[in-house]
Length: 175
Image (cartoon, rainbow, N blue to C red; front, top):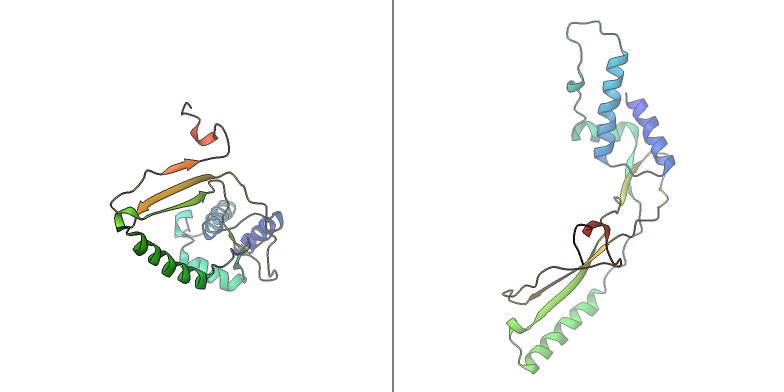
């Protein structure tokens, strides 16, 4: 069963597909079930499809036996400038004191992107391979803005922005 699973993993890797632990375990259960159906049963204590769980422990041992390992598909994000951030905290604190603001008047607003079609950034590959070429990620996203004051007694509602006039995920809403 594991040899067939490794053939499948290699095929998926060559196709550039992302493989997660869940996907591999699901395929292992499918292959196990298919093999049971093809094998003539000879004993009273016959194996059943439910007897093989493809558990986390099985997967960890399978990784060791087969040599597959997890790699990041996409590049890493640039690291933050921690020194500049620490310096700004002091400068901002001085500004708040100088202007006489109170905590309820200090707001923080930030945006985040929700890439609702994005694939996982890790995949499992065979031991012979060191890295996996990346793929062009889907860029369909929502831009979400979140805002709250320093105390946090006031929080704004979630604000959503998109680049399309009528985004697909909001088809049921009239603009």
